[in-house]
Image (cartoon, rainbow, N blue to C red; front, side, top):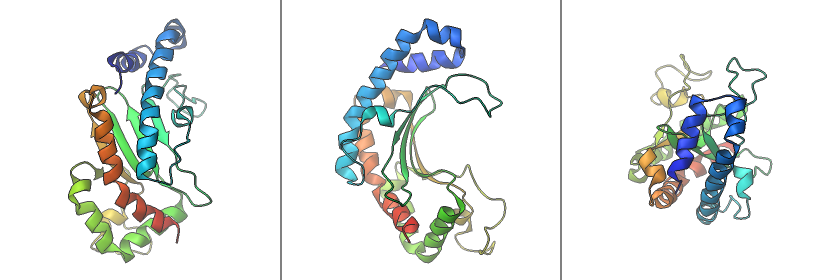
Length: 220
């Protein structure tokens, strides 16, 4: 589990997002970072045991994303992220893989799995797989193990039907998605609780049919 002080540090970063404050609180950052890395180290063998495509030898430091923001092309010039992002990246071997992502942010934590804004060829393959194998896709979406934990994000959606599909297609709401991300919201109580590892283990297991569906789609 994550320590309360780690979430408190992230909250304080959001409220004091400048280099002078961060420099004065560098020791707190290092402590929070070490806490998150320890948490990641506990999760790596759990995920690797469930999804063999994810290597148990993955270093925790490779999973933890930088807290420093790239502000070169952003209107938001805050130098630091107000979260800790953890990407359990699966090696592609030439074929893109859906990503496992854990987001730690007070009041806004979540676990997400899938493809966020994939390139057009990947998006096309996922839509084709949904169209061709609708029954399998709907069984995954309706499965109790999936449905009780996850929901498919509808944040990125086309206004019109994608090219090649009619607006009255029975699965048009799924086909209009521009990202295919399953989201599991996590409360601060979840993150700070002793049962968070078990919750995420259950999530890792429950998401596997969706992961396999996406992998099959993009490998065609």
